[in-house]
Structures are given as structure tokens and as C-alpha cells.
Image (cartoon, rainbow, N blue to C red; front, side, top):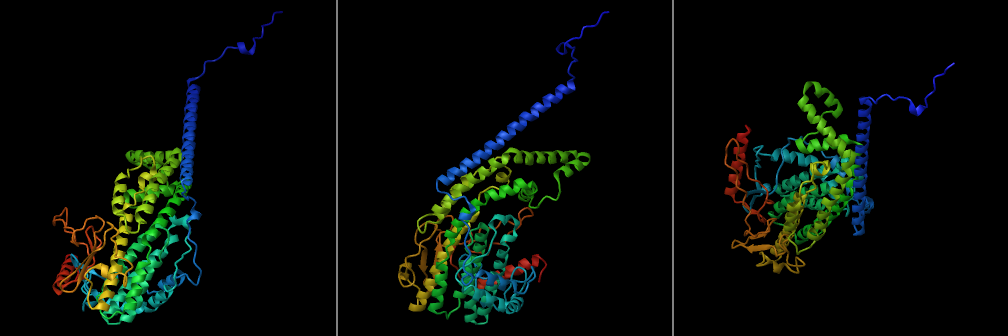
Length: 538
């Protein structure tokens, strides 16, 4: 009997591999290699970020947030709790409520003295006095409580600096702006009704508020800038009222002198750099917040779509063109999460570092550096980040405008201190001095220096007994005290006439204003009436 031989397994005939299997293996190989490459890029960028931060630390930089957190003052020294409670007790005013503005410019170097006006028109209302007077009276208990709180020498709010993106951490800043506006209106009201003691209480409290607010955050420094511009205007209004004592003026002057505007900004710049990892950690854990930020930066409003994938599925059938854009957005967010986020974070650190160093050198230099020149130069060197770095590209780290404003504020602070010293000289000697050198040492420790160009502040005593005092401003050019408004464009449908700015902190010399003449005030009020007529208001 014959038997068929059994063939060894390795000699069995093989079926040809199907093309589907080959394709699947090839696809798996490609995806695996791509995933490996993405992971290697991710790790390489992560290591690069760590190495760069180590380099900064080796140079003496402190990148740990806890090294920059301010300590809360002792309760008996802390003005913040009682002051914020006082603001909370203030009667609420409607957003459209009428407001009284101080030191409104009428022309170059001239401003309306608001408290002298029997009627106080604005571009919105023919006379805001009745409403302002009523609200000031309602606010008096809260204003007095705020003034008493600000007698305490320090400021401290328990801010969770690691969660600033939630917004509520700095909600108290809104309260401070409300208080500053109310204080200004109280000063104007009391000057109007010849109540100098009450006016001085609110003016000193307002100036102390600017001095006390030393939180090391850029948003806090911007709010401080806004508070200071209001306080300067109120101080100017008060100086148009005779009868102040040397002790009162000296106390105001000392408060302005002790404002460490630049030192606090350096601290804010250093602390904000330490918050970079917190922002990136949030975006990595919740890409939806990154998407909201990018939408806000590009269009001014947050994205309303709850999910990109849901949006893509709906658009595939209804709007293929829009679906392609959504797919591209999914790809950008996905690649950022996969391997670009750490490169993005490193770019943020590298972009922030020159500004931190500038702040230390230029803004902290007391009297010998034209900070704006350095700020302008560094701003021109700042180049946009690659599009793949979503955070750095969508939210460029160029805070040039903030630094220009702070440099201007330091110049204005020095002008204000000098104006107070000049008024003290007039009070003691009956006239303003021939030169600023005459203020030393009785009223100033040294001749005041312009922060913008390291030269003495410009000063002229006028033939009529008044004076002109100015800084060269952030363009660094002495224009002889020229504070002319920029020319408005011609009135066309494409470019309607724009009302001139009513502030002295524009692009020209920072000139301490003289009181406007009656004719100049009448012209200003006529302009306001014309603006109201265009809006259909009485």
C-alpha cells in the first residue's frame, strides 16, 4: 500500500500576499515612523526648552514663580481690605451715567478749569453738574472710608497668581478705577462749592491710591497708569484754587515723589515671565481655551462652536469649503499639541527675555537714560513668530506700548512733583522762580531731570507771572512746549472728522497746562454742543 509523503511545513505552497495586507502594513509603517518622528520632535523641543531655562537660571534669572510673589502686609498696615469694602458700599451708577472730567484741554498748553464752570457740558450732555453733585453726596461715606483706609501705608490683595487666566483673580482692579473717578468728581465738586478741606482729603487719598498700588502684574501697572492720569488732572485742578498751605502742598508732593512707577514695572515684567509655563500648561490640558484665545485675537470674539470635530461633521455636508478650513484648524491644533507647544513656549521665553533686560536697564535708570529710544529700537527688532507656534504668533510678546506709557507716566510724575514745588515757592516768595535751580534745596533735593532725555525739565517764567513747564515727551525732541493736537483727517465718508484728543499725554511735549481763557472755554463748549447735535442730543 502506497502512502503520500508528508511535506515539511516550510515546503508547503504559499498563497501570494494580498494587496490589502501589503497596504495595511505599509500604512502602519508610515504611521509608526511619523509617530516616532513626532515624538522625537516633541521630546527634542521639550529638552530644548529645559536647556534654555537652565541657561537663564545659570545667568542668575529667577524663573520660579514663588521667588517673585509679594508677601501680604500686616493687617494693620494693609489698606486694601478696607478700601475695597468701601468701594463695594458705593451706590451703583448706571454705565451711561454722566461724568465730570478734569483738566480738559482746549488748545495746546491750555485746559478748562472744570470746577470754575457754572455749567459743565460734555459731548454727551449740556450740563453734568446736577447728576454729579447728587452722586458725590451719596458716595461721601464710602469716599471717607476709602480715604481712612489709604492712611495705611501698604497694599496687598491675596491674588492667586497661578490662575490669572480666570480673570476673577484681579477683579479688584475694576473697583479701583470706579473709586478714582468718584474721587475726582468729589474733588471738583468740593472745589466748586469752596470746600477745600474736603477736596484735599479726596485728592490726597486719590494720590495715595496710585502710590499704594504696587502689584507686580502688567495689568495692575496699566490700571495704575490710568489712575495716575486721573490723579494728575485732579491735582492740576486743585492747584488752580488759591489758599492751600505749604504743609498740604508738601504732603501731596511727597506722595508723588514716593511713587516707584518704574521699580514696580520691573517687578511685574519679571513675574509675568514666570507665568509663561502656567499659560502653556493650561493650553495643553484644555486646547479649547487656546482656540478661544486665537479666535479672540483674530476676530475680537471667542469661538462659539463647542467642538471642532462636531463642526467638521456638520460642514462636510452643508459647506465643504468651510469644512476644509475647520480641518486645517484641527491639524494646526493637533500638530501644536503633538510637537510644537514646547518650541512655542521656548520662543515665548526667548522673546520675553530682552524686554525684561530692557526694563532693568532703561526703565530703572533714574535720570540718565532715554528709555523710549531703547523701547522703540527693541520694538523694531521684534519679529512675528512662525505660524506653527500658535501662542507666540497669535499673541505676540511685544508690549512696547505698555512701556512707552510707563515711561510717559514717569515723566508726568516728575512734572507734577515740580509743579507742586513751584507752587510752594510762589506761596512762600510771592512769585515763581526764574529757574528750577531756585527750588533746590528748599523744595526739591535736586534740579528735576526729564526722564526722556536726561536733561533738566524745561521751564520758563512768563511775563504775566505764570510759568511753562514741560517734558520733551516720548519722541525725545524738545518742541518748545508744543502740545498741539494731531491734525484731524478731512471730513469724508471714508475718513470722517475725528475730534482732537482732550489729553495732554499725546505724541508731543508734555506741557503742564495753563488755565484756558474764557474765549477758549466758550469754544470748547461750542465744540461739545456741535458734537451733541451730530448725535441728536440736546
